[in-house]
Figure 1 (cartoon, rainbow, N blue to C red):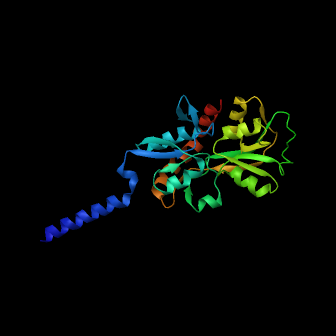
Figure 2 (cartoon, rainbow, N blue to C red):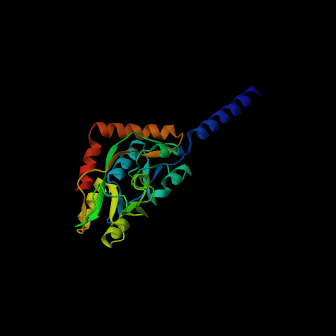
Figure 3 (tube, helix red, strand yellow):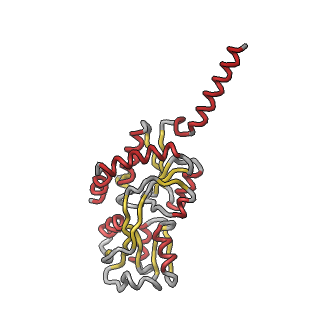
Length: 243
């Protein structure tokens, strides 16, 4: 009888251990969500999502002996996708903010973002006269929050994609776009009618996100990020995908 009791208890302990491990150990896939319209961090090239964040995510998956699965969704749905358990983590040029920290856990900072203003060539818009203008931004980004907080007299157009913002400016629907400098350079290089104003509007930091309390995954991602920040790998990826 004692042997049977011990066996049952051992089975319960093992079952409890498996449950405590969470979903990560139950699959050989690591699911990441992003919004693939943010070159050079994530964008489509020949129907494949590539970019700085994708390269880093591949390294994270490799370190965990998992296959990376990338899902392209709208930016404003990313946090919900992670919190619902439909994705393990997200990376999409996510600015680290106090508001987002209340909803998810952030990794270490791995990239610095300079926010700039894109206008149509010949425009009279300057960094000092944005209030009162019509500003196009990507929905849910820090540019969206910054414009909303700082330009009370401006009209804010919120788009799902930066390509739509570019069309806003080219067609005269908006006076300018506020966005990250690296994607802005990509956008301008593909749209000769547009240019970037001299100067930086504001600077923020990027991190990846996991569901609150998912410390195990957070630590694994941070280990890769810390190594790649230290050895210059992220700088290499940034140069590669910014060409």
